[in-house]
Amino acid sequence: MSTQVQFLNGLNTIGGNVVSFTQGNTRLVMDFGVNFAPAETPTGDLLADGTLPALPDLFTDVDSDMATTIFVSHLHLDHMGALKYLTKPTDVYMSQASADLYQVLTELGTESAPNATIKVIPFETPMMFGDFEVTFFETDHDARGAAAIRVRDGVHTFVHSGDVRLDGPHPERVNHWADILREAHIDLFLLEGTEFSFDADDETEHVRHTEMSVQQDFGQILDEHHQLVVINPYERNIDRLEALQNTARLHGREILWDKQFATIMRAMGVADVKEIDWEAVVADPNHYVVQNHFNQLHDLDQFDGQFVYLHMNGEPLGEYDPRFAELQAYLDANHVELQRLGASGHAKPEDLVSLAQHVNAQKTVTWHSFKPEKEAEALRKVGLNVYLPTKGETLVY
Ligand SMILES: [Zn+2]
Image (cartoon, rainbow, N blue to C red; front, top):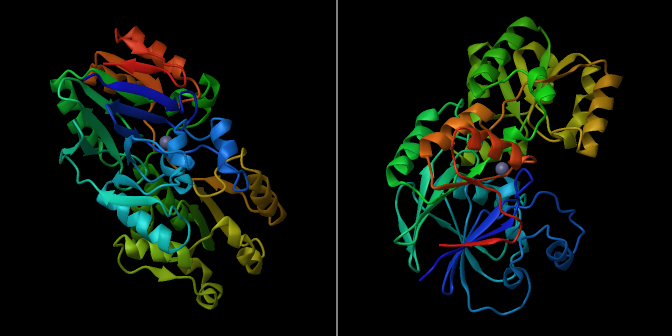
């Protein structure tokens, strides 16, 4: 029986990339994100305008004889944000760490997908779904539990890279799965291309930071300043939160977290997490680092501009979010500089080229990028066979 590989979404956007593998009435869908969907927009409109993948039976009461299983490579919104729109109970497989994080986010009310039946697939443990075999490989991205996903139909091998980087703390994980894929002479490799999205000008302007350099710079800033340091990290980057807490302690400070962050960190096994105690902070500000979410920005009023503000990939992430201007205005009014101290979860362009070259698939598809054609060009230059599908296109194997 042939396998149909259909590209449902996210071909020239960062995230929201969805592909399905179908054989008979077995359908595997991965990932399951949305890029941007205002909360008030009805599901039918999101389906009609293509924000949601064109899988109407999953989002309406239309019946279907397809047996669908969803796979989530990691727990960022652009890879799982569509789960909440599911209208029928559907199995959703993810790694153990992703499932743990999903559970605490659900308890906190941050995530709510009543029809998503979360199931765990351990790394490097093939599982059968109809005639498909699916295997998750642990990878390196700025989300704990992130995976690359291999699908085999008995004859062909297809791989969804998920989001990946090679200058993170665990390049050996990526090299490991890349070695396995190289040996397997895979048919189709779907490769993210986030860092190909930006113009050369932007690239030369910004120095590449890594998780390791973030910690070094953070330690240095703590040493240089004798006032309160405020950080704005992302609550789903557990490994970074844990590292920040350790770095702060090495430099004689304690990080105090808000209730939400503290709950998530404890649920994910981070030890000795301390919550905000403003009285203690006011009494001895240079002994502390306080994590601040945009929603609680005005907690900082009491410091009258006497603090350092480190933006560490928390919300609002950038200028495209209208809240960013608000944050900037607040800091300006307080004469505090917004210092960016973050790192990308995505591989540098040259690392993506090396990765694709190493895997050496029969066919590589570039997506999860504003400029997949730029990535395609770079890969073709090194002799790879690259294909740029259009939205909705199906390849038959
Ligand atoms: Zn992504």
